[in-house]
Length: 46
Image 1 (tube, helix red, strand yellow):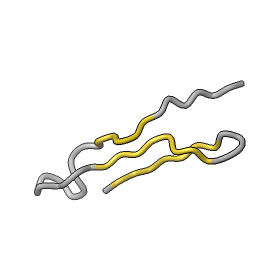
Image 2: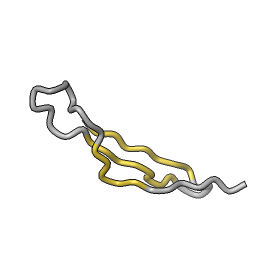
Image 3: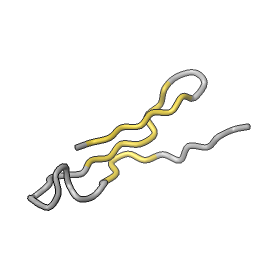
């Protein structure tokens, strides 16, 4: 199972996070842990 999050920058959508649970190996359906493969630090400008 994987997850991708996007954030609006005011001009375009940019990827802000991507992760996968890896292989389940009979521990838990979809995998037991969230393993980040792409992470950013999104800062809100006021």
